[in-house]
Length: 222
Image (cartoon, rainbow, N blue to C red; front, side, top):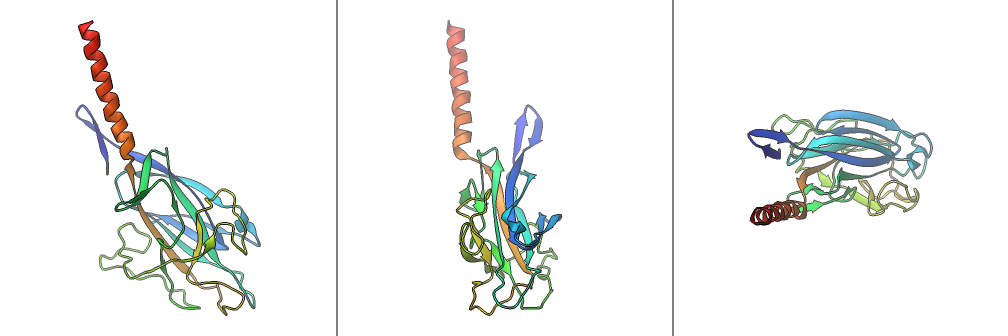
């Protein structure tokens, strides 16, 4: 966790992460292992994404975990997908993993996915440390990469207002009229990230401090 010091008092810094997410047509969402909400979109309700925000500790790994499903199966093509974005507010923070820092995380192949088989309701197993799949730090190295169906705006969903155009609809495989696939089986997603201060902002602070010190020196001489 990032700590800022004022005299002898340390203050933990939190960053509010603002997000927008949707799924065709049902999902449970967790942050750092804590259940946040479930949403079922009857019919075409997924056209309007859920917007939400969460204060998170800076300099610490966090994870958004999603259990997606499509509870309206019918014969033939039954498309399913998850779409969303994560952005820090204010925008002078990076979010990412390792050196892959960005101001905006979108759904794409960097999300990890777990899928057993059609008809299975089994959740991902605990990792070697006994952590649940929704927890930050969970070992998802055995998971696959999410499959990018197409960008926000692709068929059959069209463009979802409120979510970045660079976000991809993700699932486990291509859903098409000839795929023979069904979507009434849970699919699990995870995306880890760490809010860190933007280097330019920190440099600006140092320059401001230096400028202020120079001004005071000039005032004293005057």
